[in-house]
Length: 134
Image (cartoon, rainbow, N blue to C red):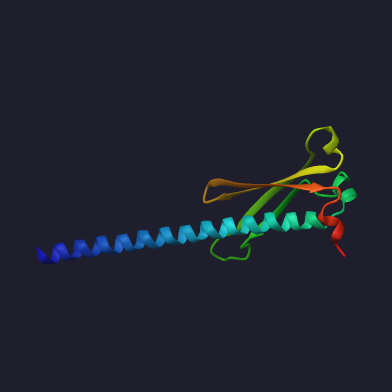
């Protein structure tokens, strides 16, 4: 009887250990995916900062759709494909619509069968920081 109870306790311990490790690895993977999404959003906004006012307002100069990869060469999984969209819209009441644009970048991906998405919005002004690029 003692041996049976000991084996049962060890089984519960190993099962708990396995569940904890699996949960930890899942949490790490989720954090990596979110970090990569943040990196992609920042990368796109940094590129927007380098465009001048005419380029931002030229239709088709800034692509409306894009894709990015995360771990595409990983042998255990095929990697994740992030799909994104960029929207540039005039902002504000009449005097401001000439000199101000809202830039919204939306990123989406599937993570273990669940749809995930992140959105980041910022503003670009005609006489903003993009005029200070050397």
